[in-house]
Every structure is written in C-alpha cells, then in structure tokens.
Length: 593
Ligand code: FAD
Image 1 (cartoon, rainbow, N blue to C red):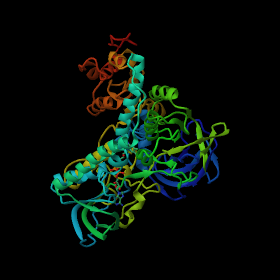
Image 2 (cartoon, rainbow, N blue to C red; image 1 turned 60 degrees about the horizontal axis):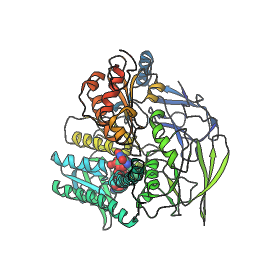
Image 3 (tube, protein in one colour; image 1 turned 180 degrees about the vertical axis):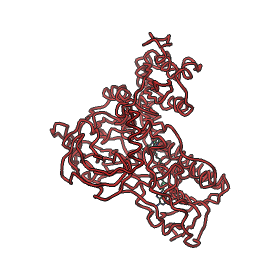
Image 4 (cartoon, rainbow, N blue to C red; image 1 turned 90 degrees about the vertical axis):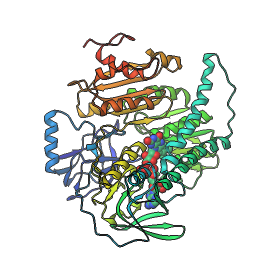
C-alpha cells in the first residue's frame, strides 16, 4: 500500500528534514515516518497503516506536497482487514486521532505485552506499586492504588508535588486568566454605563496570589499522601532493571524495587534550535507564568491553546501582543467556525496576528529581540519585541528514564505505547498521561491514572472513554469534544448538525457577550450526539454536559427534552438540539423534521 502525504494545510513543496524509518522496519498505525520542515515546529507524517516498510520514496532534502507517495508498506493483516471494512462502510475510524479528542481505539498499543519480569532484587525501599512522577496522572494513580490497599511509593524529582498542571500549567495559568478576565470585564463595563479607573497592577501581589493558589493545592497533595501512607521519594528516577528504579536525590541514590510500576513522567516544552536559549527575554510557558515583568511588545510564537491563553493574560496586563502561527488558523485542529469569534475578538485587541507565517530567525539585540518572519508567499519581514514566548508544543519525557532497562519501548519522540489497560509491553509496568500520547491534558492523565491503578490492583477496568474534551480558556473560551466537523469531512463521515447562535440567548446578551455559538453533531442514522463544539464565555464548563451525553449515547430528543434552567448559557445546548430537531421557538426553525 502507498503511504501519502496527508492534508498539510495550504503548503506545498515542503522540505523533508528527517526520514525516521528504514526499509524493513515494522511500524504501527500513526507512528511518525518523516518530519517536514517548519521553522516553528516540525510536522510529522504518520503512518496510515501498521505493517512493514518495503520502499522509501523520499530522502532528506526532498520536497513533498499533499498526496505525494512517500513510502510503500506491506500492511499488517488486521490493519488491511480493518481498512477494507472501513472502506466498505465508507468511513474511517469515528473518534480516532485529531488534536484534542481521541477514542479508546486510537491509542498506539504495544506490539505485545510480556508477562511480568523476574524481580531484580530487593531495593533500599520496596513497594507493591511505584509511581514515577507526581503530576495529575501520577498522584491520582498513587492515591487510587493506595485506596485499593496497595503499598505505594511516589517518586518525584521536584520539591513540590503536582507536576506541570499544578505548578506551571493548568492552575497558575487559570489564576492569571481569572485576573485577566476581571480586568477586561471592568474595562468593558464602560459601554454599560459603569466606568472604573485604569487598573494599577502590583506584579508582586499578583504573583503571590498565583503562587498562593499553587501552594494551597500542592500542599494539599502532601497531606493527602500522608493520609494514605503513600511514601514520597524525592529525586530523579531511572529504571535499572525490570523491577527497580534508582532515584538520585540530594542524599544520594535510593534503589526502589517494585512489583508493579506506573510511569507518569509527563512532558516538557519543545525548544526551537534557531532561537537564543541563554537570553531571559526568550521564555516558555513556565517563564511566562513567572510573571517577571510586563513587556511592552510581546511575540507569542505559536497560536495553539497555551500560547493564546498566555496572550490573553499579557494583553489584559497591558502588553501589545503579536501572535504568529504557521497554519491558516489559530488553534489548528479545531473547527474554523468555532475559532472565528475568538479570532474576531483578538484581532480587535492585539497588535498583529500573522497566520500562515513562520519565524526563521531571532536575533538578540540590546534594544530587543529582532524576529524574522516568512509568510506563505516566501516574503520576509522583521519586527522587534521585548519578549518572545515560545509555545510550539510539548514533548514527552519518555526518553529520560532508561525505560529500555525495564524492557519498556519508547518511540523516537519519547512516547510510550500502551494498551487499553494502560499496560506497556511489560505487563507489570503501566504508563499514563502526557508520556503516552495526545491529547496532553490533565483530565486525560487523571482518567488514565485511575485506570492503571485499578488494573494494577486487580479491578476490572479499561480505558474506554468515548471523548476527551478540549478547552482553550481564552476569552471567549473555545471547547469541543467528540467528532469535529473537520474530522467528519476528512474521514467522509456523514453528520447532521444543530447550531445555536448565542446572539439569540437571553443570558449571553445580558452578559454583554453575544459572540458565542453552540454546535452539536448528530449521527443521521439514529440522531445520537457524536460531537460538540462551543465557543463563548464559560464554554469550558458547558462542554461537560455534551461529553456526558455522548458517553451515555443520548440523542437529540434527550438533549432537547431535558429541562435546562433559564436563563443560562447551558440552555444553548438544549437549543442547539432543538435547532436540529426543528422544534426551536426562540429562533425560526431551520428545517422541519
Ligand atoms: P506532568 O504534569 O508533566 O507531571 C510529570 C511529573 O513527573 C513532574 O512532576 C515531573 O517532575 C516528574 N518526573 C518526570 N520524570 C521524572 C523522573 N525521571 N524522576 C522523578 N520525577 C519525574 N491541561 C488541562 O487539562 N487543562 C489546562 O487548563 C491545562 N493548562 C495548561 C497550561 C500550561 C501552561 C501547560 C504547560 C499545560 C497545561 N495543561 C493543561 C496540560 C497539563 O498540564 C498536562 O497535560 C498534565 O500536567 C499532564 O499530567 P502528567 O501527570 O502526565 O504529567
């Protein structure tokens, strides 16, 4: 079978920078085959099938466009059969792939799961379950296993528990986004006849508010560990055998032996090679959350969720923001109509938003960081900023832990493949969270952590979630779950939709923010809801109702006939179902069913 370059946006003749496989290699579906050049980040072309590579038709330095054949694969039997079945149905896998959402069947599974290896001796400490990494995935796994009666050791390299999410991710960013929201709402009250003065920002106070929130939560985790008798061993852990991890801490090495282990090592920001690293004006999300100063002009390199959330914070604090994004829209992967209200709002607030544009160079000058951009027509231009925030994605930490010494496979990117029981290729070693794959989200890590802990404790449990909601906590918020319209089009899946514009919502108008939209996608066969996309204030809270509806197999009548409180934004879910049914009375019905 030929493997072709998929839709890569409006780009053509994109250089191949790395060929990641050789003839004779066996690959899984979705394994990366080649990397295409983008000066902002690299794009990987994944394998469309599992099987053996029999011919490679491109070399590093070649250029490729959508549809070009890059390799030939002898597809594995199961994969070829599945492919035929899908062809027969006229559709690809329903929930698979895509940024943000992924069905249980879309995970890369280990080639085979080996029975538990023989114990490599007793360590300085021993636990029935050892969890490596204390992020949301790790601490949830550790606590759940302890609650199920296991003796648990939790290994963490940093003094503070909670991982990226609690220390330098979800929580501090949301504390600052709340402040940003209050500032912009107060400012916009002017048009409602209420004016406040220009905000005075005390950065030290603001920083200590944010740090206080983080400390409250991470301190709470220490208490919860003690309460459950989960021992925390501090230091950097690496496998030394199938049942042993050596932890390098301040007091030397502690060898921790285990019966079972859950790897929850998380991820870290991707760095770009052509950007100065030793200049404190170049920051990543962790640096942005430190809130050292409020730069006058700030470049956000990457129009994804993390970059746009930080843009929202610094814009409210007074920075002039420029966003640069390689793809043709912000939040690539989300439906275009979904991100439009956000795009319209930030266009009006930010200095510049450069789409289809890449950064080719950043020069550190005394007066600022001189950035060279190149647009999709190949034209270059420069601009100078006081700070550059690099937010081009995150890479898994799988390569840092010597997993191979325990027989656990880590792919070229640092991901660890797991099956639906969160087991790696070794039946006594599990992996969860960012280190097992996209979407890199805390709630996915927590869910997987609980699955792993329960399976390790002998419970009947597997990862079978239908949806993993994605949310950008921008202003307005953007949220989606299940199938997107873009995926439906790409995969040839027939859907019908109900769309309710918030301009007709009494609550939204009362809030002075009517730009939102609630869109539900239905399976035309049985009217079951299979996807949802919401943009508007509090969209992140609203999406949970539809996530539950999809998990429960609810249909349009279920959503349309559930009495929602009035006037709330949650009614928009009800109304979107009614738009699909043709029973709406707050607007003209779009069609009769
Ligand atoms: P992590 O949180 O990365 O934790 C891994 C832990 O393992 C770390 O504490 C690390 O120190 C430790 N560790 C790693 N290797 C070792 C080792 N060898 N020895 C000892 N310890 C080790 N997600 C959301 O769902 N909602 C959001 O709003 C959100 N906002 C975000 C905002 C920002 C700015 C960022 C950067 C991320 C955000 N995320 C958000 C993503 C979320 O933080 C991650 O998906 C989540 O933290 C992953 O959890 P995890 O348990 O897999 O790993």
